[in-house]
Image (cartoon, rainbow, N blue to C red; front, side, top):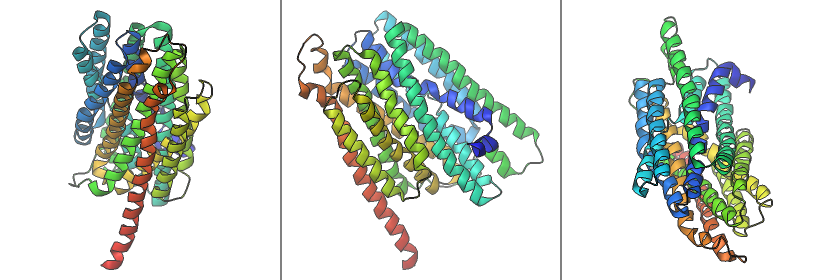
Length: 426
Protein backbone atom coordinates (compact mmCIF):
# COMPACT_ATOMS: atom_id res chain seq x y z
CA UNK A 1 0.00 0.00 0.00
CA UNK A 2 2.94 2.34 0.70
CA UNK A 3 4.18 1.89 -2.86
CA UNK A 4 0.72 2.65 -4.23
CA UNK A 5 0.47 5.84 -2.19
CA UNK A 6 3.98 6.90 -3.26
CA UNK A 7 3.46 6.26 -6.97
CA UNK A 8 -0.21 7.18 -7.23
CA UNK A 9 -0.81 9.79 -4.46
CA UNK A 10 -3.46 9.83 -1.74
CA UNK A 11 -5.69 12.12 -3.79
CA UNK A 12 -5.80 9.59 -6.61
CA UNK A 13 -6.65 6.70 -4.29
CA UNK A 14 -9.37 8.64 -2.44
CA UNK A 15 -11.10 10.25 -5.43
CA UNK A 16 -10.97 7.06 -7.52
CA UNK A 17 -12.64 5.14 -4.70
CA UNK A 18 -15.26 7.85 -4.10
CA UNK A 19 -15.94 8.07 -7.83
CA UNK A 20 -16.83 4.39 -8.16
CA UNK A 21 -19.19 4.25 -5.17
CA UNK A 22 -22.27 5.58 -7.03
CA UNK A 23 -21.98 2.83 -9.65
CA UNK A 24 -21.82 0.21 -6.90
CA UNK A 25 -25.09 1.49 -5.44
CA UNK A 26 -27.10 2.03 -8.60
CA UNK A 27 -27.99 -1.51 -9.65
CA UNK A 28 -29.21 -2.91 -6.34
CA UNK A 29 -30.60 0.54 -5.54
CA UNK A 30 -32.75 0.70 -8.68
CA UNK A 31 -33.80 -2.92 -8.17
CA UNK A 32 -35.06 -2.20 -4.66
CA UNK A 33 -36.58 1.18 -5.57
CA UNK A 34 -38.71 -0.38 -8.32
CA UNK A 35 -39.71 -3.27 -6.07
CA UNK A 36 -40.51 -0.91 -3.15
CA UNK A 37 -42.73 1.14 -5.48
CA UNK A 38 -44.85 -1.97 -6.02
CA UNK A 39 -43.86 -2.39 -9.67
CA UNK A 40 -42.80 -6.06 -9.23
CA UNK A 41 -39.58 -8.06 -9.41
CA UNK A 42 -40.03 -8.64 -13.13
CA UNK A 43 -39.75 -4.92 -13.92
CA UNK A 44 -37.07 -4.54 -11.23
CA UNK A 45 -34.89 -7.17 -12.92
CA UNK A 46 -35.58 -5.63 -16.33
CA UNK A 47 -34.47 -2.25 -14.96
CA UNK A 48 -31.11 -3.67 -13.94
CA UNK A 49 -30.86 -5.30 -17.36
CA UNK A 50 -31.54 -1.91 -18.99
CA UNK A 51 -28.64 -0.42 -17.02
CA UNK A 52 -26.41 -3.16 -18.40
CA UNK A 53 -27.56 -2.71 -21.98
CA UNK A 54 -26.96 1.01 -21.67
CA UNK A 55 -23.50 0.35 -20.30
CA UNK A 56 -22.77 -2.06 -23.16
CA UNK A 57 -23.58 0.72 -25.60
CA UNK A 58 -21.97 3.59 -23.72
CA UNK A 59 -18.87 2.08 -22.13
CA UNK A 60 -16.92 1.43 -25.35
CA UNK A 61 -17.68 4.98 -26.45
CA UNK A 62 -16.49 6.34 -23.13
CA UNK A 63 -13.36 4.18 -23.21
CA UNK A 64 -12.39 5.27 -26.71
CA UNK A 65 -13.20 8.89 -25.85
CA UNK A 66 -10.89 8.74 -22.84
CA UNK A 67 -8.11 7.25 -24.97
CA UNK A 68 -8.60 10.00 -27.57
CA UNK A 69 -9.52 13.10 -25.54
CA UNK A 70 -8.21 12.51 -22.03
CA UNK A 71 -10.18 11.42 -18.99
CA UNK A 72 -11.47 14.45 -17.09
CA UNK A 73 -13.66 15.94 -19.82
CA UNK A 74 -15.26 12.56 -20.49
CA UNK A 75 -15.86 11.85 -16.79
CA UNK A 76 -17.43 15.27 -16.22
CA UNK A 77 -19.69 15.02 -19.28
CA UNK A 78 -20.81 11.49 -18.41
CA UNK A 79 -21.55 12.54 -14.84
CA UNK A 80 -23.87 15.33 -15.98
CA UNK A 81 -25.77 12.99 -18.31
CA UNK A 82 -26.04 10.29 -15.66
CA UNK A 83 -27.37 12.64 -12.99
CA UNK A 84 -29.96 13.99 -15.43
CA UNK A 85 -31.12 10.44 -16.18
CA UNK A 86 -31.30 9.62 -12.45
CA UNK A 87 -33.52 12.63 -11.92
CA UNK A 88 -35.78 11.49 -14.77
CA UNK A 89 -35.97 8.00 -13.26
CA UNK A 90 -36.92 9.44 -9.86
CA UNK A 91 -39.68 11.55 -11.38
CA UNK A 92 -40.91 8.49 -13.27
CA UNK A 93 -41.16 6.48 -10.04
CA UNK A 94 -43.04 9.29 -8.30
CA UNK A 95 -45.45 9.80 -11.20
CA UNK A 96 -46.01 6.08 -11.80
CA UNK A 97 -44.63 6.37 -15.31
CA UNK A 98 -44.93 3.70 -17.96
CA UNK A 99 -42.30 0.93 -17.67
CA UNK A 100 -40.79 2.03 -20.98
CA UNK A 101 -39.93 5.43 -19.46
CA UNK A 102 -38.25 3.82 -16.46
CA UNK A 103 -36.33 1.39 -18.64
CA UNK A 104 -35.18 4.17 -20.99
CA UNK A 105 -33.96 6.26 -18.04
CA UNK A 106 -32.17 3.24 -16.58
CA UNK A 107 -30.50 2.64 -19.94
CA UNK A 108 -29.12 6.19 -20.02
CA UNK A 109 -27.90 5.82 -16.42
CA UNK A 110 -25.91 2.78 -17.51
CA UNK A 111 -24.64 4.35 -20.72
CA UNK A 112 -23.36 7.41 -18.86
CA UNK A 113 -21.42 5.47 -16.21
CA UNK A 114 -18.05 7.33 -16.15
CA UNK A 115 -16.08 4.04 -15.88
CA UNK A 116 -13.97 5.32 -12.98
CA UNK A 117 -12.49 1.91 -12.21
CA UNK A 118 -11.35 1.38 -15.80
CA UNK A 119 -9.72 4.80 -15.93
CA UNK A 120 -7.95 4.14 -12.62
CA UNK A 121 -6.63 0.79 -13.86
CA UNK A 122 -5.44 2.41 -17.06
CA UNK A 123 -3.50 5.01 -15.11
CA UNK A 124 -1.87 2.33 -12.92
CA UNK A 125 -0.86 0.50 -16.09
CA UNK A 126 0.72 3.65 -17.50
CA UNK A 127 2.56 4.32 -14.22
CA UNK A 128 3.86 0.76 -14.08
CA UNK A 129 5.06 0.72 -17.68
CA UNK A 130 6.73 4.14 -17.31
CA UNK A 131 8.62 3.21 -14.12
CA UNK A 132 12.39 3.61 -14.38
CA UNK A 133 12.92 0.15 -12.88
CA UNK A 134 10.99 -2.49 -14.93
CA UNK A 135 10.95 -4.94 -12.02
CA UNK A 136 9.49 -2.38 -9.63
CA UNK A 137 7.09 -1.26 -12.33
CA UNK A 138 5.80 -4.81 -12.71
CA UNK A 139 5.52 -5.13 -8.93
CA UNK A 140 3.63 -1.84 -8.74
CA UNK A 141 1.22 -2.91 -11.48
CA UNK A 142 0.55 -6.31 -9.92
CA UNK A 143 -0.17 -4.77 -6.53
CA UNK A 144 -2.23 -1.98 -8.07
CA UNK A 145 -4.52 -4.35 -9.99
CA UNK A 146 -5.04 -6.39 -6.84
CA UNK A 147 -5.83 -3.19 -4.95
CA UNK A 148 -8.24 -2.06 -7.66
CA UNK A 149 -10.18 -5.30 -7.40
CA UNK A 150 -10.25 -4.95 -3.61
CA UNK A 151 -11.43 -1.34 -4.00
CA UNK A 152 -14.14 -2.42 -6.42
CA UNK A 153 -15.33 -5.07 -4.02
CA UNK A 154 -15.17 -2.75 -1.01
CA UNK A 155 -17.41 -0.48 -3.06
CA UNK A 156 -19.68 -3.44 -3.69
CA UNK A 157 -19.86 -3.92 0.07
CA UNK A 158 -20.57 -0.31 0.98
CA UNK A 159 -22.76 0.30 -2.09
CA UNK A 160 -25.32 -2.51 -1.71
CA UNK A 161 -25.44 -2.18 2.07
CA UNK A 162 -25.95 1.56 1.78
CA UNK A 163 -28.49 1.22 -1.03
CA UNK A 164 -30.43 -1.45 0.85
CA UNK A 165 -30.55 0.56 4.06
CA UNK A 166 -31.47 3.80 2.29
CA UNK A 167 -34.38 2.24 0.41
CA UNK A 168 -35.58 0.20 3.41
CA UNK A 169 -35.38 3.05 5.94
CA UNK A 170 -36.07 6.18 3.87
CA UNK A 171 -38.07 4.96 0.90
CA UNK A 172 -37.32 4.96 -2.80
CA UNK A 173 -37.64 8.69 -3.52
CA UNK A 174 -35.26 9.86 -0.77
CA UNK A 175 -32.87 7.06 -1.64
CA UNK A 176 -32.75 8.15 -5.28
CA UNK A 177 -32.06 11.74 -4.17
CA UNK A 178 -29.16 10.46 -2.09
CA UNK A 179 -27.79 8.48 -5.03
CA UNK A 180 -27.82 11.66 -7.13
CA UNK A 181 -25.93 13.65 -4.50
CA UNK A 182 -23.34 10.90 -4.11
CA UNK A 183 -22.82 10.76 -7.88
CA UNK A 184 -22.26 14.51 -7.98
CA UNK A 185 -19.77 14.46 -5.11
CA UNK A 186 -17.88 11.25 -5.92
CA UNK A 187 -17.65 11.43 -9.69
CA UNK A 188 -17.22 15.21 -9.55
CA UNK A 189 -14.24 14.87 -7.18
CA UNK A 190 -12.57 12.35 -9.50
CA UNK A 191 -13.12 14.61 -12.53
CA UNK A 192 -11.56 17.55 -10.68
CA UNK A 193 -8.56 15.44 -9.69
CA UNK A 194 -8.03 14.33 -13.28
CA UNK A 195 -8.22 17.92 -14.45
CA UNK A 196 -5.64 18.96 -11.86
CA UNK A 197 -3.07 16.37 -12.91
CA UNK A 198 -3.64 17.26 -16.58
CA UNK A 199 -2.92 20.91 -15.81
CA UNK A 200 0.16 19.95 -13.80
CA UNK A 201 1.47 17.79 -16.64
CA UNK A 202 0.92 20.59 -19.16
CA UNK A 203 2.97 22.98 -17.02
CA UNK A 204 5.92 20.60 -16.66
CA UNK A 205 7.57 21.18 -20.02
CA UNK A 206 10.73 19.38 -18.89
CA UNK A 207 9.00 16.02 -18.55
CA UNK A 208 9.32 13.50 -21.32
CA UNK A 209 6.32 12.12 -23.19
CA UNK A 210 6.28 8.82 -21.32
CA UNK A 211 5.87 10.52 -17.95
CA UNK A 212 3.10 12.73 -19.28
CA UNK A 213 1.38 9.64 -20.62
CA UNK A 214 1.59 8.08 -17.14
CA UNK A 215 0.17 11.21 -15.55
CA UNK A 216 -2.83 11.38 -17.85
CA UNK A 217 -3.28 7.73 -18.83
CA UNK A 218 -3.31 8.85 -22.45
CA UNK A 219 -2.24 6.66 -25.37
CA UNK A 220 0.73 7.01 -27.63
CA UNK A 221 0.17 7.70 -31.33
CA UNK A 222 0.98 4.13 -32.34
CA UNK A 223 -1.96 2.28 -33.92
CA UNK A 224 -2.42 -1.09 -32.23
CA UNK A 225 -5.07 -3.78 -32.23
CA UNK A 226 -6.88 -5.50 -29.38
CA UNK A 227 -5.79 -9.18 -29.11
CA UNK A 228 -9.33 -10.55 -29.37
CA UNK A 229 -8.35 -14.23 -29.33
CA UNK A 230 -6.68 -13.97 -25.93
CA UNK A 231 -9.11 -11.45 -24.47
CA UNK A 232 -12.28 -13.34 -25.38
CA UNK A 233 -12.01 -16.10 -22.72
CA UNK A 234 -11.13 -13.51 -20.07
CA UNK A 235 -14.09 -11.35 -21.11
CA UNK A 236 -16.43 -14.35 -20.95
CA UNK A 237 -15.13 -15.17 -17.47
CA UNK A 238 -15.95 -11.61 -16.38
CA UNK A 239 -19.44 -11.93 -17.90
CA UNK A 240 -19.96 -15.10 -15.86
CA UNK A 241 -18.82 -13.30 -12.69
CA UNK A 242 -21.27 -10.49 -13.42
CA UNK A 243 -24.05 -13.02 -13.91
CA UNK A 244 -23.26 -14.44 -10.46
CA UNK A 245 -23.49 -10.95 -8.95
CA UNK A 246 -26.74 -10.07 -10.74
CA UNK A 247 -28.50 -13.37 -10.09
CA UNK A 248 -27.47 -13.42 -6.45
CA UNK A 249 -28.64 -9.90 -5.67
CA UNK A 250 -32.00 -10.46 -7.40
CA UNK A 251 -32.56 -13.86 -5.79
CA UNK A 252 -31.65 -12.52 -2.34
CA UNK A 253 -34.00 -9.55 -2.82
CA UNK A 254 -36.87 -11.84 -3.73
CA UNK A 255 -36.15 -14.37 -0.98
CA UNK A 256 -35.74 -11.80 1.78
CA UNK A 257 -38.89 -10.06 0.60
CA UNK A 258 -40.76 -13.31 1.15
CA UNK A 259 -39.15 -13.65 4.58
CA UNK A 260 -39.96 -10.00 5.42
CA UNK A 261 -36.23 -9.36 5.93
CA UNK A 262 -35.67 -6.84 3.14
CA UNK A 263 -33.10 -4.85 5.16
CA UNK A 264 -30.81 -7.91 5.20
CA UNK A 265 -30.45 -8.05 1.42
CA UNK A 266 -27.76 -5.36 1.28
CA UNK A 267 -25.61 -6.69 4.17
CA UNK A 268 -25.73 -10.30 2.94
CA UNK A 269 -24.95 -9.27 -0.63
CA UNK A 270 -22.22 -7.03 0.74
CA UNK A 271 -20.54 -10.14 2.18
CA UNK A 272 -20.00 -11.29 -1.41
CA UNK A 273 -18.04 -8.08 -1.91
CA UNK A 274 -16.01 -8.64 1.26
CA UNK A 275 -15.00 -12.11 0.13
CA UNK A 276 -14.20 -10.83 -3.34
CA UNK A 277 -12.06 -8.01 -1.96
CA UNK A 278 -10.06 -10.44 0.19
CA UNK A 279 -9.57 -12.68 -2.84
CA UNK A 280 -8.34 -9.71 -4.86
CA UNK A 281 -5.58 -9.01 -2.35
CA UNK A 282 -4.56 -12.65 -1.94
CA UNK A 283 -4.76 -13.52 -5.62
CA UNK A 284 -2.38 -10.72 -6.67
CA UNK A 285 0.33 -12.35 -4.51
CA UNK A 286 -0.40 -15.95 -5.46
CA UNK A 287 2.03 -17.11 -8.14
CA UNK A 288 0.03 -19.60 -10.18
CA UNK A 289 -1.11 -19.63 -13.79
CA UNK A 290 -4.22 -17.73 -14.77
CA UNK A 291 -5.91 -20.98 -15.75
CA UNK A 292 -5.29 -22.49 -12.31
CA UNK A 293 -6.59 -19.45 -10.45
CA UNK A 294 -9.69 -19.13 -12.63
CA UNK A 295 -10.41 -22.84 -12.24
CA UNK A 296 -10.18 -22.52 -8.44
CA UNK A 297 -12.45 -19.46 -8.52
CA UNK A 298 -14.97 -21.33 -10.64
CA UNK A 299 -14.94 -24.27 -8.21
CA UNK A 300 -15.61 -21.95 -5.27
CA UNK A 301 -18.48 -20.30 -7.17
CA UNK A 302 -19.93 -23.72 -7.93
CA UNK A 303 -19.80 -24.89 -4.30
CA UNK A 304 -21.12 -21.64 -2.82
CA UNK A 305 -23.92 -21.35 -5.38
CA UNK A 306 -24.93 -24.93 -4.70
CA UNK A 307 -25.23 -24.05 -1.02
CA UNK A 308 -27.34 -21.00 -1.89
CA UNK A 309 -29.74 -23.24 -3.81
CA UNK A 310 -30.44 -24.93 -0.46
CA UNK A 311 -31.83 -21.52 0.67
CA UNK A 312 -30.15 -21.36 4.09
CA UNK A 313 -31.58 -19.10 6.83
CA UNK A 314 -30.68 -15.43 6.56
CA UNK A 315 -27.77 -15.51 9.02
CA UNK A 316 -26.42 -18.73 7.49
CA UNK A 317 -26.28 -16.93 4.13
CA UNK A 318 -23.38 -14.81 5.40
CA UNK A 319 -20.57 -17.44 5.32
CA UNK A 320 -21.92 -18.78 2.02
CA UNK A 321 -21.84 -15.27 0.56
CA UNK A 322 -18.25 -14.83 1.77
CA UNK A 323 -17.25 -18.09 0.06
CA UNK A 324 -19.01 -16.99 -3.12
CA UNK A 325 -17.10 -13.71 -2.96
CA UNK A 326 -13.77 -15.52 -2.68
CA UNK A 327 -14.60 -17.35 -5.89
CA UNK A 328 -15.75 -14.42 -7.98
CA UNK A 329 -12.92 -12.20 -6.68
CA UNK A 330 -10.31 -14.75 -7.73
CA UNK A 331 -11.75 -14.94 -11.23
CA UNK A 332 -12.14 -11.17 -11.52
CA UNK A 333 -8.64 -10.08 -10.49
CA UNK A 334 -7.04 -12.84 -12.56
CA UNK A 335 -9.01 -11.80 -15.62
CA UNK A 336 -7.96 -8.16 -15.25
CA UNK A 337 -4.32 -9.15 -14.76
CA UNK A 338 -4.43 -11.38 -17.81
CA UNK A 339 -6.04 -8.64 -19.91
CA UNK A 340 -3.45 -6.09 -18.84
CA UNK A 341 -0.67 -8.50 -19.76
CA UNK A 342 -1.84 -9.08 -23.35
CA UNK A 343 -3.18 -5.61 -24.20
CA UNK A 344 -1.28 -2.81 -25.95
CA UNK A 345 -0.65 0.29 -23.78
CA UNK A 346 -2.37 2.62 -26.24
CA UNK A 347 -5.66 0.75 -25.82
CA UNK A 348 -5.50 0.05 -22.11
CA UNK A 349 -8.49 2.21 -21.11
CA UNK A 350 -10.51 0.68 -23.94
CA UNK A 351 -9.67 -2.87 -22.82
CA UNK A 352 -10.37 -2.16 -19.15
CA UNK A 353 -13.65 -0.50 -20.12
CA UNK A 354 -14.50 -3.54 -22.24
CA UNK A 355 -14.05 -5.82 -19.23
CA UNK A 356 -16.07 -3.46 -17.04
CA UNK A 357 -18.82 -3.57 -19.66
CA UNK A 358 -18.71 -7.37 -19.64
CA UNK A 359 -19.14 -7.29 -15.87
CA UNK A 360 -22.16 -4.99 -16.09
CA UNK A 361 -23.66 -7.06 -18.91
CA UNK A 362 -23.29 -10.16 -16.79
CA UNK A 363 -24.92 -8.44 -13.82
CA UNK A 364 -27.79 -7.31 -16.01
CA UNK A 365 -28.28 -10.70 -17.60
CA UNK A 366 -28.15 -12.48 -14.27
CA UNK A 367 -30.58 -10.02 -12.69
CA UNK A 368 -33.00 -10.34 -15.60
CA UNK A 369 -32.90 -14.16 -15.61
CA UNK A 370 -33.39 -14.44 -11.86
CA UNK A 371 -36.07 -11.76 -12.06
CA UNK A 372 -38.00 -13.94 -14.52
CA UNK A 373 -37.52 -16.93 -12.22
CA UNK A 374 -38.71 -14.98 -9.16
CA UNK A 375 -42.31 -13.81 -9.84
CA UNK A 376 -43.83 -16.89 -8.19
CA UNK A 377 -42.22 -15.78 -4.94
CA UNK A 378 -44.11 -12.49 -5.03
CA UNK A 379 -47.46 -14.27 -4.96
CA UNK A 380 -46.33 -16.25 -1.91
CA UNK A 381 -45.61 -13.32 0.40
CA UNK A 382 -48.46 -14.21 2.71
CA UNK A 383 -48.11 -17.97 2.46
CA UNK A 384 -46.85 -19.68 5.62
CA UNK A 385 -45.26 -22.63 3.86
CA UNK A 386 -43.04 -21.63 0.96
CA UNK A 387 -42.21 -24.06 -1.81
CA UNK A 388 -38.49 -24.82 -1.66
CA UNK A 389 -38.35 -25.30 -5.42
CA UNK A 390 -39.81 -21.82 -5.97
CA UNK A 391 -37.34 -20.23 -3.56
CA UNK A 392 -34.36 -22.09 -5.00
CA UNK A 393 -35.08 -21.44 -8.68
CA UNK A 394 -33.57 -17.90 -8.87
CA UNK A 395 -30.31 -19.20 -7.34
CA UNK A 396 -29.62 -21.72 -10.12
CA UNK A 397 -27.96 -19.36 -12.68
CA UNK A 398 -24.82 -18.91 -10.50
CA UNK A 399 -24.44 -22.69 -10.35
CA UNK A 400 -24.37 -22.81 -14.14
CA UNK A 401 -21.86 -19.93 -14.15
CA UNK A 402 -19.55 -21.97 -11.93
CA UNK A 403 -19.44 -24.71 -14.58
CA UNK A 404 -18.90 -22.10 -17.31
CA UNK A 405 -15.95 -20.52 -15.48
CA UNK A 406 -14.27 -23.89 -15.00
CA UNK A 407 -14.70 -24.60 -18.72
CA UNK A 408 -13.19 -21.20 -19.59
CA UNK A 409 -10.16 -22.00 -17.40
CA UNK A 410 -9.52 -25.05 -19.56
CA UNK A 411 -9.59 -22.90 -22.70
CA UNK A 412 -7.13 -20.44 -21.13
CA UNK A 413 -4.86 -23.31 -20.13
CA UNK A 414 -4.93 -24.58 -23.70
CA UNK A 415 -4.03 -21.13 -25.04
CA UNK A 416 -1.09 -20.94 -22.64
CA UNK A 417 0.21 -24.32 -23.79
CA UNK A 418 -0.17 -23.23 -27.42
CA UNK A 419 1.80 -20.02 -26.84
CA UNK A 420 4.61 -22.03 -25.28
CA UNK A 421 4.82 -24.30 -28.32
CA UNK A 422 4.65 -21.56 -30.95
CA UNK A 423 8.24 -20.22 -30.52
CA UNK A 424 9.60 -23.77 -30.77
CA UNK A 425 7.79 -24.36 -34.03
CA UNK A 426 9.33 -21.31 -35.71
